[in-house]
Length: 30
Image 1: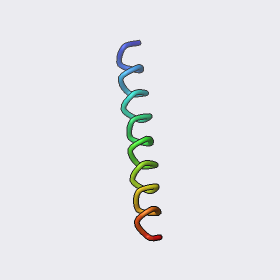
Image 2 (image 1 turned 90 degrees about the vertical axis):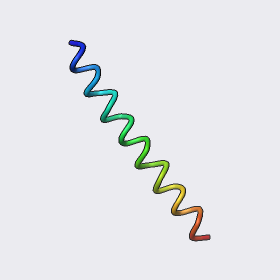
Image 3 (image 1 turned 180 degrees about the vertical axis):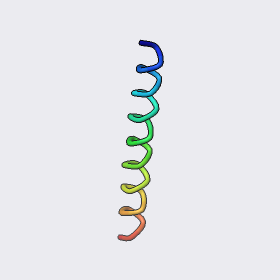
Image 4 (image 1 turned 60 degrees about the vertical axis):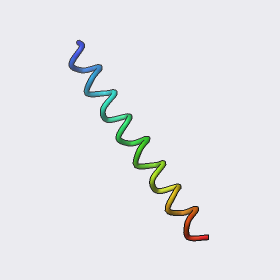
């Protein structure tokens, strides 16, 4: 159970980081 939570946290954190990076690059383009 704990391993599943760690895996879920890692995946969600990765997606959050990816979205923040894409938003940042979109902001720099303008």
